[in-house]
Length: 201
Image 1 (cartoon, helix red, strand yellow):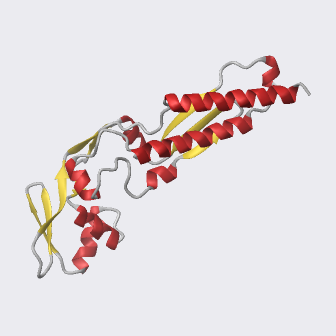
Image 2: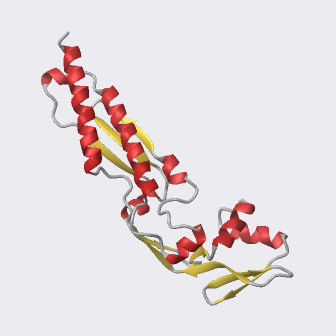
């Protein structure tokens, strides 16, 4: 389920209701998108867990393959502007929560090596990776909550860690901070001024 941030203009005067503020709200919606991207690039606390840092080989929160940032899109009307993403995992990244894995559990990459193998085999799911690796001659075994792999000549290594659930911290990337509010109010004031000027001609 996706998530959205919306900015609305309050009650409008009779004169202003006849004017078209759509261009201004399009500017505001584009700004909301750029603001969200700026927040993600700056890093949204709290920092990643040690395992996540190891898997991603870095501590950039909400950053992995760029999918979240590129999914944020502007929307606007005559008196409102919004930035939204329809990615399924966006809401839990924004608001936080718990993900439960069901009967099979959650299979979490155990290291950067797992992620490298997933990219190499274009595997989106653990099962897809395991099938691809079988074709390369790997064997597999499980010890406790760790699913391991072993090539014919190499040493065994942890491929996935299996958990019942994972807690996701809230990292709000769609929100209007003080800097945003000042910029948006300035855009709206300019837009209203232009709209009133055009309505008086």
